Amino acid sequence: MLIIETRYIVDPALAEPHKQSHVEWVRKYIAEGLFILAGPKLEAGGGVIVAHAVNDERLQAILKEDSYVSEGIVEYKVSAFNPLFKGAPFQA
Image (cartoon, rainbow, N blue to C red; front, side, top):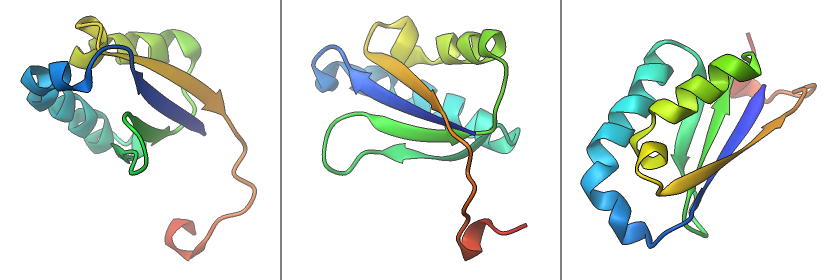
């Protein structure tokens, strides 16, 4: 599993014209099952995506598709983790 965190590298107001295409990008990968959860951080700018493990080359290609990346609005930080413990909503 992966935690993908976004961090604004410019004024977040500059993201507004690109928000719709960013949302469509997120929804595409939610529908494909690659992204499991996604949304904005509540306490600070940026967002979080939880994704299934995918090879780094494919993940980098997917992240480059995001309009927020192509427009130089955010950077992504990717951390892999092993979800040993799961709450009821995530039980198979």
